[in-house]
Amino acid sequence: MVIGMPRSGTTLIEQILATHPEIFGAGERVHFEQVVEAAMPLRPGGLQVYPEAVAALSPKQMRQIGVRYVASSRKSAAGAAHIVNKRPTNFPFAGLIATALPNVRIIHICRDRVDTCLSCLSKIFSGDLPFTYDPGNWVGITVLVRL
Image 1: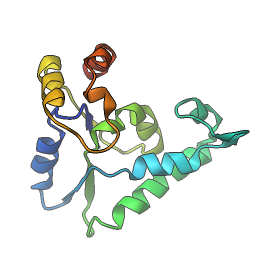
Image 2 (image 1 turned 60 degrees about the horizontal axis):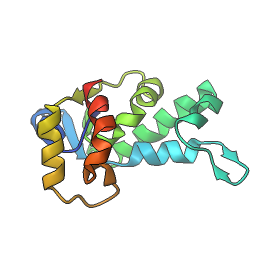
Image 3 (image 1 turned 90 degrees about the vertical axis):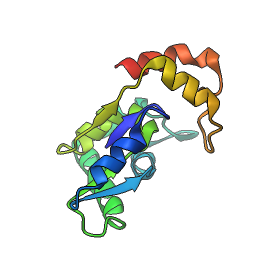
C-alpha cells in the first residue's frame, strides 16, 4: 500500500515496484474504502462515520475487512504475489489498514510540503479532493504529510 498526499510521488513508487514480475500495480483502488464503509455498524439515522465507528468493530469484523479487501483486489491482479494500491487518500486509513491486513507493507511518501502544495494547486483533480484547491486547508494537510 502506497499512501501520501496527491502529487507526492505515489505513482512513481508504484511504477518502480510494478517492474518486478511478482508485483501488480493496481493503481488507485477504492476497494479498501468501500470494504470499510460496508463494515461500519449502522446507527439511527445512517452509517457511522469513520474513524469513530472503528471502536465498535470486533476483531472478527476487522479480519473480515482484510479478507474482503484482499479478495476484491485479487480479482484484477492476474495471479501476482503482491499488489500495490497507490491511492494517496488512503492515508486516513493507515492504522486500520495495518490492523485489518497484518502482513501489509505501507510506504508513506513524504515529498517537500511546499512542492506538494504547489503541485496540488497547479492540477485540477477529478473526484473529491477539495482540500487540494483551498490554501486555507493546507496547514492541517501539511501536518499530515510530516507524520
